[in-house]
Amino acid sequence: MAKDKMTKVRWLYSYQKECRWLEEMAMKGWFLENITIGIIYKFRKDEPKRMMYEIDRFNLPKKPTLEEIQHKEIFMEMAQELGWQEVTHDESLTYYFCKEYEEGGINELYNEEESRRYRAQKFGSFLKKQAKAMTFWAMIITIIDVLIRLESLAIREMADKLVWYDWFTLIYVIICCATALFSWKLGEKTEKELSMTRAEWEASVDTALHKTVRKLVLTTRGLSKLLKKEEEKGWILKSVTPTKYFFEKREGGQQVYTMDTKWLTNQRLKKSGASKIDDSKDWQGLSNDWQIQSVKDAQEKGWQFVCALENRTIIYRGDADVVEALNDAKYDYSMRSTSIIGEYGMFLILCGLIGGVIGFFVGLLSF
Image 1 (cartoon, rainbow, N blue to C red):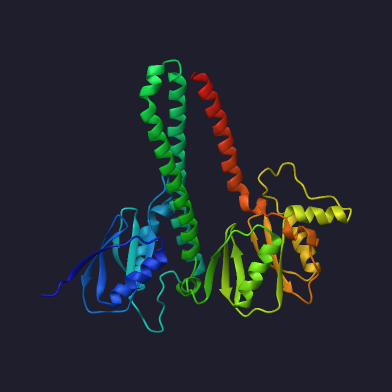
Image 2: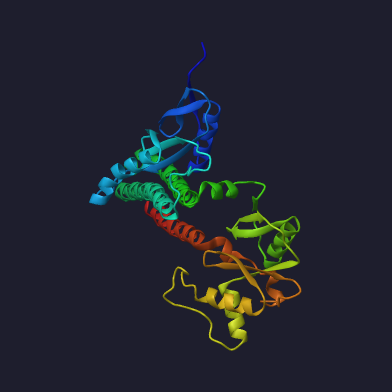
């Protein structure tokens, strides 16, 4: 007798990838019946079919509006009218829907940009809320540990007995911070991918069309060499992070690249006799005034905008025979320290310095 039930354990960090996997399982004759804690999938055996799967969330906020309360019921009725059936939901209230594929029909439950964006925001907000909660409790435990330590400084024996709590706090805070960072990043990724159509997402993960290069580039000259080398292979830069470069497959040309920053923009303004761009109230570097000026300067010299890294770096591309140098060649070997460290890096350095000072004085008081 053939086995008609199967359990699989999989840890997937992409809802789009999860839906595609469930569709592949259905093509093999295995159909989702239940999911537990987000990783334990139970399937039943039946005749293979081409099925489509979708997901959504219906958890309510602490103070829901009437619209939020009624949203699930209205959505379920609409989904059924379109041929989608509820399969199951997990403990985080992620609901799974499926329908049989229709040739020439609409095979996406969220076939409008507005509905995709609304769903994406729900998932993103949920994951980011988890990250904030973990960060909050890490701070509370740390504060409690510091207060206990300050109380116990006068009693040596008590301080020795509380060493276990120091270790508990350290491990707890590390786990909380790592989980919070993971949840926040996953929230951003989920919100981005669920805003796409299935076709757009499939194209974004197609390794024949997209690739990522992980490399720490420290100078403008090094950056230009890297991008030129990749372009010769048919890869054009799409976006960047401090250590990752995202490329798409596209026909290039005799292109050159340059990078611009607020400091370099101010150097050009200084050279021309103009006032530099500076806002004493802009502590976090959120103002984009320098970027506006940078784009104007670049366009005047024939450069085209490629991408920007937050509010710290802009990368331009241009035809080698047309563009004029945006900045003096002596800056080609300048360090990209501002771009690499960034807001989070500066925050970590500041926290480290404050923690070091507190630890130093607590150590002095304990003697």
